[in-house]
Length: 288
Ligand code: PAF
Image (cartoon, rainbow, N blue to C red; front, side):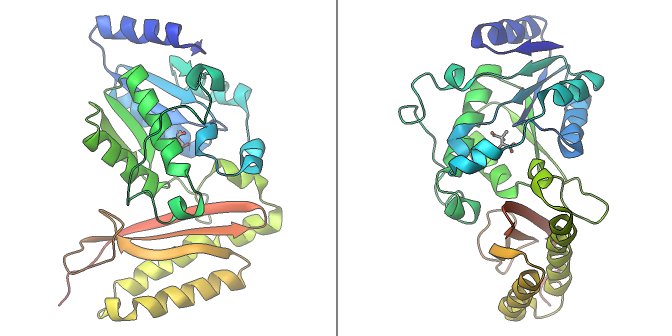
């Protein structure tokens, strides 16, 4: 496995693949890989001649220095997992390599509207950091496809918009969230949950599933505020502090409206020191 830390050898590897007219899939990650990441890698392997996984904890997308410091890392085990899957190249640059001018001076990409609500509102600058690093990776690697998980649904829509509006020649492929047996979405941050918090955390997905069931009932739009308020109360009673909880049109995260075919219930909660996000995407039956 070629472990690349600098831009020059990265370009050499990409050029070698390109000379042979072979396709490249990119899986961007911040490391501490779990089965959700590995599902993205397996998908990428099936879709392209070569797979490159980036491992980079991007400081530009952290609004909280403590969160960045606490972000889990397990490089040796990550490399072992990726090697077992037959990944040929890992790109793990240093911060200086990617941001030689530093965070303040580096040019940044802001995605208006889509990035301003939900996680964007609660983590100022987060999606600007994501859009900037993903653009850099696309420019450096020029992948044919890039694979992302639907757990970060708002991030996924932002990256799709980035690609369409900034004309990146890459196909974005999205995979469903991988979950533990009790429904909790796999996340690198789950390691910070205590045993009791881990138990309570399963209420997040259970509540989102309940909202989906309720929202599919006749006259659902009239009852939406009540459904959401009851769900938020339930989460609060389970010691999950709600940051946001809403139901939106899945295509653009705007309000559900006549003609919405797919809805998404999405939430962020805090449990102890850990912030969890999750969502459920579902088809809405047409209004009678
Ligand atoms: O989803 C993530 O892990 C990160 O936001 C990403 C896409 C790797 C960019 O740093």
